[in-house]
Image 1 (spheres, rainbow, N blue to C red):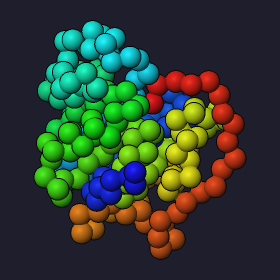
Image 2: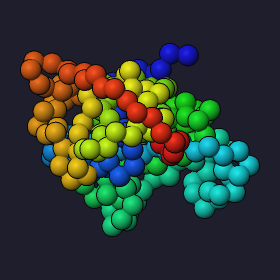
Image 3: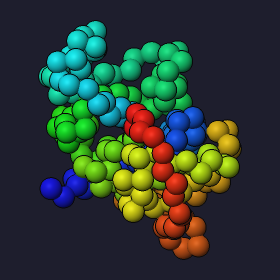
Length: 205
């Protein structure tokens, strides 16, 4: 199945944990919040049987046994979803889904938004089921490790972004929104960077 084309979505993944992708998302939200309504999605790909998935998330907003969608309401929450809301996102959701049901979960969640809603989404694996305007992956400076979920979608990356966790080699001013779509301005267009990867053990998306 071809990935769903979703104009208005900026997708940001990471090569490893603690790379700073949520901080980058927050900076982009702060850059555009006075001009546009931005919503945010954080995706967690879970590797667990459906029965266990339901039991472990019984306090969340359970949609069905295949995925859970939870809307963040507290900008004071120190978790990533709270940080995204505090940065100025209009609405923030967390999607938790087994790998086989990312498509179902995202399709259901996108029904919450109008078709031209601008969205910033955090995930690697969701790139398997959706085609955003741009797909960035954040790499930690000096780290050669790349988690499998990033390797799997590496051929789709529009730009690899280097970070020490606090600073980035992408400035939000390099992004524009034109006709309801995200575009990257550098040397006249979108830049794609090649990189040689070193894989490692699996982890959460």
